[in-house]
Image (cartoon, rainbow, N blue to C red; front, side, top):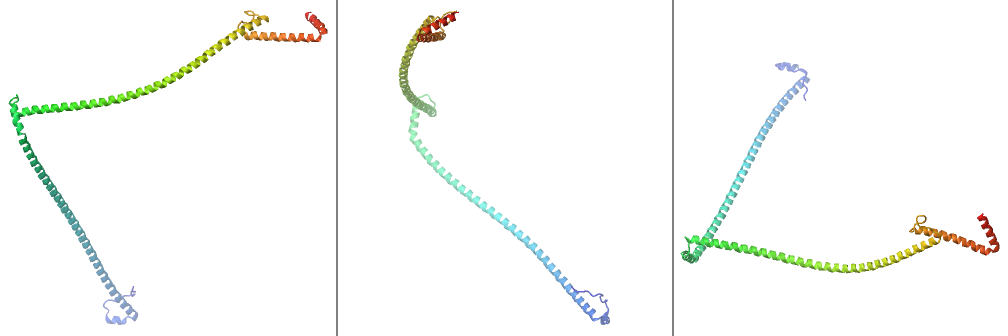
Amino acid sequence: MFSKPKKSPPAGSGTASRNNLSMSELYAYTEFQAGERELKELRKTSKEREQYLENLRLRRQELQKEIKEQEEQRFNLLLKEREVDVAARKAARETREKEAKLEQQEQEYAEMAERKQELLREVQKYSVFKDFLEEVLKLTTFEDVDALTAHFENLLQYRDRLYERENQVQDQVGQQRKKLLKLKDQHELMLLQGNNQLSQLQTELQKARSEAQNWQRQWNHIQETAAKKTLELGQLKMATLNLFEQTGGVVGAEGVDISATDKQLEQIQMYIKDMSGIIKQYQTLLQRGPEGNNHTKTEKKSNSK
């Protein structure tokens, strides 16, 4: 930066006024003028550069616009080329299809011509039959050959239906025969299984009969043993009853029931116990001698008193 002088020189002062200036002021004024010139040049240079930059910006915009237009033109050109390519492929495909269709039609025409020749040969071949049918027609009541052939066709269709029906019946018969054979095999299998089961059952029956005979023998033995035991029990009861009566027991309403063998045995046991005691006392007296008898008599007299 340039320092400005404190006081600018007055305009139009001339040489005399310059002569009155000091050296320092003159130097400062000279520096100021140089700075202004340099500033003007810098401003001019700046404007030129700004103008140059503006021109560059405008040129850049123009170039971007041109590039965009060229890209659009190129894209449109690619689209047109693609459309042309698609149209060419479509035309080529249609041409191939037309050629193939033409070849197919030519082949069909050739086949039809060949078929026509075959039909003509067949007509010539069967013309003899036509003449024959015309001769036969004279012997029938049909009006023309077409009616006669229609009748024959109906007969042939009827024959075909009968033949088909016969085949169906044969198939049904075959199926029924297969079912019959299957049922026969099942029946034979069931019969064989039944025979096996019957044999097993007969074996089991014989075994059961043998076991039943063994059980019957055991049952008879048990019954015989039970009868013997019952007889022995009756005999024991009778003996017990006799013994009970002999020991002084009373049977009936005033005494013990006739079937109460346990009570009878208890009383018999008591009687035997008492008798055993008496026998022991008697044996003891016998062992003591006469003194014992006198003593016993004295005890009896005292007891009787």
